[in-house]
Image (cartoon, rainbow, N blue to C red; front, side):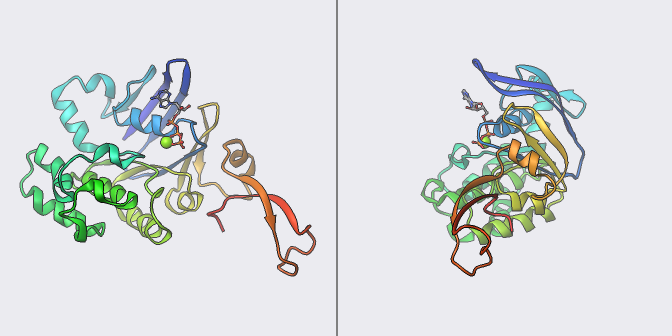
Length: 264
Ligand SMILES: Nc1ncnc2c1ncn2[C@@H]1O[C@H](COP(=O)(O)OP(=O)(O)OP(=O)(O)O)[C@@H](O)[C@H]1O
Ligand SMILES: [Mg+2]
């Protein structure tokens, strides 16, 4: 469905991606992990054609995206097929109401029944109650859901989601994992949420702090893949206090060990 070949990106003298080769097949659900600043958002923006590669290319539909986007017909198809949910959902919300926001894409693409489609998708992500509100008055989690609905309403083939659970409470995050699992779309989801990664993606990509791909394979397990997780800064240590008799009697009362907070 989409591939990157020798994809490199720099912002001035700051390397953000150092040569990434990967291929994602139609129907795959892929999770993208890595520490702050390793290049996850940059990779998704390059795949969405929002940023241009410094070197290498992104290939969609047998054509280099950056070059294809100069062609009106390719651009139209690509914009309909590929949706990017920005890490800061605010960046994509600019209409007067939630309803207009979700209907904007269908209207741009000249689809019939834009408002009905928008209402239906708003209902599916639980936004009926805020349809007539201005998007800027919503909570961060609600904004992310508006961003998601405004992509899904176009029935894209490939969804690129940049930390979609970052502003969601635990129940909404759980709901989103199930919702994403059931979508027919090919998905690439950047996240720091390791439990989401384990549930959602059978395939897991990890970017290292050197901005290269250090893992492309099965979902990671905290026991088996400790080295990769430590290299990618996905486990951390800090001091714990345990009460006497809570199962840590052989440890000092205050001790340090590696763990991921959201992972049982
Ligand atoms: N507009 C920019 N100008 C300069 N440097 C940038 C810009 N955007 C990103 N960078 C740098 O590129 C690198 C990769 O950033 P990116 O946003 O892709 O990381 P990330 O993996 O998404 O991090 P996070 O987990 O914090 O979202 C970082 O070092 C970042 O500082
Ligand atoms: Mg990011």
